[in-house]
Image (cartoon, rainbow, N blue to C red; front, side, top):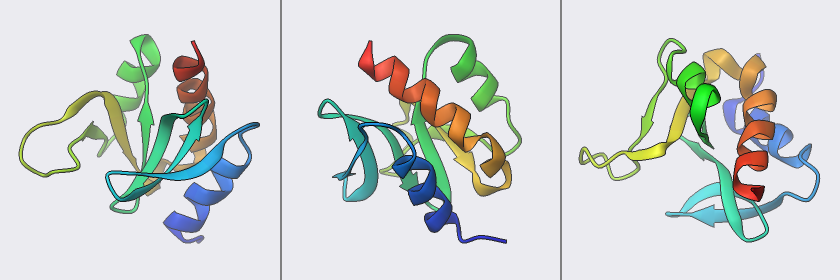
Length: 101
């Protein structure tokens, strides 16, 4: 079993043109200066829309990303647990495509 943060990093580094950065003090990857994935609480967080957003949110244990923990979720961002790491690459690709417009 791999480490969640190592897996997050591996997935992010496989995205062409992705740059490692920070968002709210959390590790993230950006493209064109826009964050599209992040790492938080042993989960990968994706900026998604439409059917892909709904499918990610439907995964067991997935939730809207609330980095403050104060009930102010970021509605476009879905936090997907490590249990679904096999889906992280596909979701990361969709997130990159979404922010790239």
